[in-house]
Each structure stands twice: as structure tokens, then as C-alpha cells.
Length: 213
Image (cartoon, rainbow, N blue to C red; front, side, top):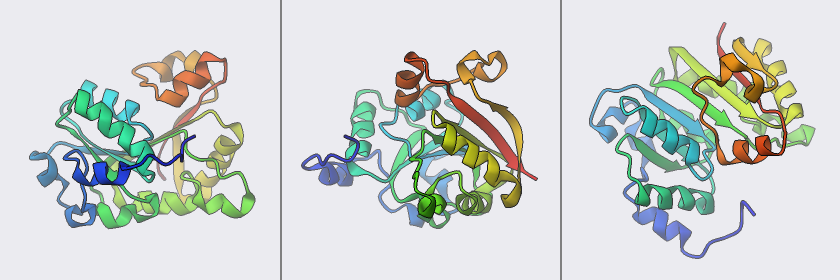
């Protein structure tokens, strides 16, 4: 299970050089973490880190930060980095609600949301990462010409996400309800662990790319 406790995970995370332990101190200064002025992209809810690691390996001139709330899951990403270190990727253990405390206005070039928790109960709608409440947070940290890319296998969550765009002041740049059969949007696609699992059993993958109105 995703939330199963792993003894010692927090201690391992606390000792890891791949984790930025005081992210709020680097607000507006993430270039200091990486030692360069390359563009910064982030994934919120990165899971075990496969997507971020493949993306960082393919784009050495971009800096990446993977954000994950759960220690047990972040531990898996750290283990992957120990096997194949990437200088342009770092991790944060943090709740997504705090992203505006960690990144400055316009500091992030792109945000990735992959297979986010659907929070299916209506009363939890504001916790969904593509909700208008979170879109407002992204607006505060995203560069003027920045983009958000969202992928999911959950049709209800995707429909919800599409419905949030206009009220929140965002527009679609591209959208598909079957990514793996969309030749244009599939170009350069990097899969997550969940994406590989769900697509292998025939589940369609939904994706949008959005920008500010």
C-alpha cells in the first residue's frame, strides 16, 4: 500500500543529500541549490520518482524538484537516486499546500501533476491538485509563459479538472482523452509507474496542458 510505514524512512530522508531539507530557505534562490541558472520545473506528488528521474536524465539543462508528501514513497525515489545520481534533480518532503512558501513568484517554468489523488468525496474537492484552489497557488509561482501538464487515468478527476479551468482563469493548450493513441501529444511522453501499469491493461490516459488566460 502507498501509505504503509517503513521503519526508519524519516531518518533516511533526513540524512539524504538528495533532499532539500529546508526548502523555504531557498524561495527565490533555487539556482543556488543547483549552482546554475537553468530553468526550474517541478512535479507535485512525484510518487516513487520514475517520471522525474527519466525527465531529468533526458534534459540535463533543466533543473527539477520532485515534491512528495509521504516519507515511505519518497524513500523509494531516494533509493533510485542512490543507484543513478542526477545533478539536476532534488527532492522535497512537503505538503503541496505549502508550495508558495518554497517557490517565489514566477520562479517555476513548468509544473507536472501525474496521477494525483482523486479525493472522490465532494467535500474534499479543494484538496485535488487540479482544483481552482491549487491553480491559484500555481499561478503565484509559475513563470508568465509557464505551463501545467496534468495526466490521470481517472475520468471523473479529469472532467473535474477541465471544469475548474475557466473559473480559475486558465486555458487549454492541448488535451486528449487517450494519450497513448494521440500521435501528436504522445511525442516525447515520459511514463510514470502508474501510467505504465494502467495503460498496459488498456485504461485510457487523460492529459491536458494549460496556460493562463
